[in-house]
Length: 86
Length: 203
Image (cartoon, rainbow over all chains, first blue to last red; front, top):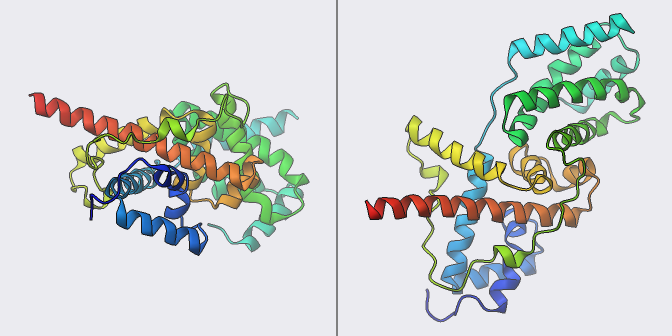
């Protein structure tokens, strides 16, 4: 699959701007086909897209702990105090 | 997520300042805002401040909100502002937009994909914790105006339209910042894994 497309040309640069929209399925069908045609031909862009997809998946998998109960209580009592003083 | 009917009812209780309305408001949105603050700020203390500032400020001004449908994006707007103020960057605009050229990979022989596939990450607590720390650092290194968009889109799973409404940005600006934020995270992660591989190679 590699070899007949020199990576780094204007086509790669133009597609580079659209990769997130491609991953998010936000491209028009024509533009989407352009990305896929290019990817079939350019190994380096394919690798790049895969690394971007992985980076996004890592971000999405990074969770946060639940709201601690003591913090919730603190907020409720702080709010109670502001009401009493107003 | 709560249905819009629940939000309609909650909003009418808040408008009437009914007994227990604040508690219900905290129960509904507290966890979500705390998680959002923590993802953006990275520190529990900062996330706690963001949560308190957001809930108390939002509760007071929610009474003015006309449509319950707008409640979530409006809350995110207040929370995003609190996050950015926390970082002493009280604006949604970056100091300068980062150009795509800065993030374009070179034509040279860069290493193959080195970021591990999360779907293939081993069920090893130490590896997972280490990966999370790497990803959190990459997110934390982003300029705030880009980080806020990444957190809302890729971590909170808000739509492009919701982020645009919450941050008062054009759709095109949300897409542009999200793309740059992802490219920056990718670059940082790639460099981090490449450095590790290099260190192992030298050992």
